[in-house]
Image (cartoon, rainbow, N blue to C red; front, side):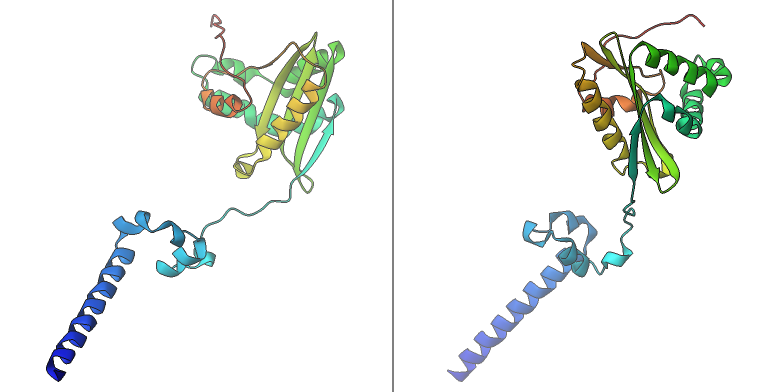
Length: 211
């Protein structure tokens, strides 16, 4: 009788030991890490299981960005960022690099001021303390709303800044009940289509220009 009880106890111990080994293997093998049960999906639990700490994770810093809204009087504040945007267009343009090479902020500002005189203009700045890190220019002329220019400095992207700028511009335009709202995208910069699509702005036609 004692021998049978001893054998049963050994069997249970061996069984538990094998279960523990199997659990350790599953949790330590990389190919199984994506199949951790949902109740173990909290960051703290995952970090403990995989020998990681929250401090080791590479997280983007939370930035304290302020926003300033005004009219065409703020245009001069966007010049450094506009220059960066023009460089981006220059890099991506396949056929009109010479156009962006000749392009100047003064010429662009003159065109924007002309639009402002014919209707209304909004300029929204995103600032990190005293540094302008993003902007959006929108205008309304003869019932047509337009996102004239939108840009966020590279080091400040993926922080929700462009979303905030876009939302403010659209809310402002919608107060005028525009006939339509448009945005012009330079060829080569089609990567932004997905961003604008979130706001219902979709490609309608392509303008071809003789070189």
